[in-house]
Length: 475
Image 1 (cartoon, one colour):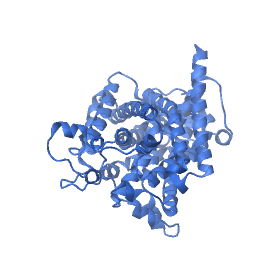
Image 2 (cartoon, helix red, strand yellow):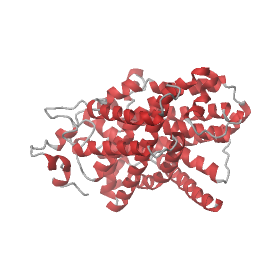
Image 3 (tube, one colour):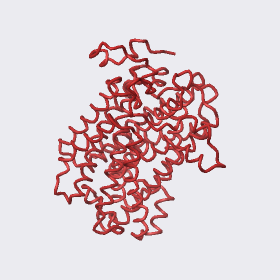
Image 4 (cartoon, one colour):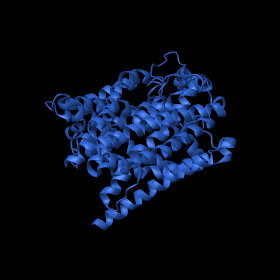
């Protein structure tokens, strides 16, 4: 098993610009330096997992952490845009995908968490130790590309939400740079806990879709049929929609974020070295699984009702193609009337401001783990400038993308499709890693978990291949 050399574990930018002694890696990554940063993740830690019990509701809440946050972040503007487009274009025909994606999404995230909890390191480190460097590097590169485009699309959506609040008196493009500056400022100078506390209430606007679906009086028979009976069409538009749904619900960035969050939780609980973190108890796996199931259930419920609302409000009235944020906001009109734009705007802004730091952060984690560099969100930027430089570069690239004049709703949909193509190769590596007894010992994933993850891999591979074939045949 490869281990990083001392030189490879040093921050290259810090080495180049300062001669000051570099803090030890464990001090940097656990915030133990004298100028400790306030950019630490919430310190739930493994202690909360050990206290997990179904008999004590307050301990159930303590066990909710990385899985719940990951699930909430999955309903980002990319998800809102994708589900709104799917509902408006195909009506109730793709409601069944919410039932399909819930178990496979939960299985994939549980597998990523299991790997991190048992090995004590992030997914990028574990993958590089088992598989050829070039193969993992190619997957990481694809992840960085997908994440950067996703950041750009989400920034555009946040700006579009801000423009809606002004009734488009301010053009969305004018708000992209301020939104990016706000997010970078929070990542560099505030705690992630503060970010979550500020913006988590804004994500509650998504529940407006649940209420709106009731007021919209959906066709009960069509809704039941669309939910329980899978419907397929062999044309590029439908297959693209399926790829987009799979890509936005089973996104590659969630794999790395889930694993890195679990490791950070362990660090926050005082497990400072890899040796201390290695090995996981069954009670800890049970707690992590519960956390993930709740988070993924929340994510898929919101997904279901966004599709349902868009189908009942837009598709049923002949609006079959959403191209602007204004059109997407109109899906909330049955509940909010003329103030629908407020609910939709808060949803875009809240989920975007929550998801963008996770997108850029997961890119930074993946790359630094692949290159054996120090750095976590618990470290101060001046101690790990390379780690934070990745975050800054990804965000700035996303800003630049918005000046190409791509409509944010279209960009969100395209991003979901890209994620659907990037995910399958990563899923293959992850399930092979989780099945390796040399790495996981007696904590290898069970038959059901592996079957569901292989199903996710097969479904996304077939959908991506079908998209390529139907697209070529359409020319």
